[in-house]
Length: 86
Image 1 (cartoon, rainbow, N blue to C red):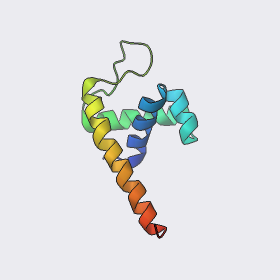
Image 2: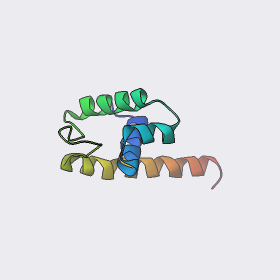
Image 3: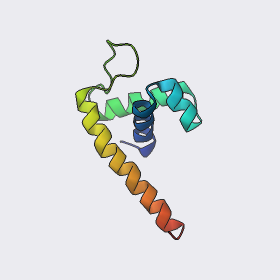
Image 4: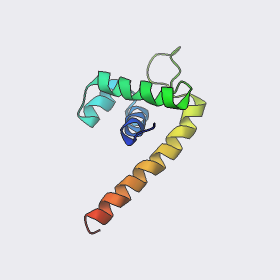
């Protein structure tokens, strides 16, 4: 199953360029972020990163996943706004 935490990890890795910086942004450990990505890759059945290159390089396919994932995060944000009366 895909979770918002996994999508959030992918988003921040893409935004900040590394698993380490994404972990700091999410206030968690790099190993937790790595585990979320491994779980997302298992759920999707394909790698999300080009591991032949240094750094966190998204594959072309994962760029498409990221677009949909960001829509999911935006919906979550809108739901929280409704909850808070906004």
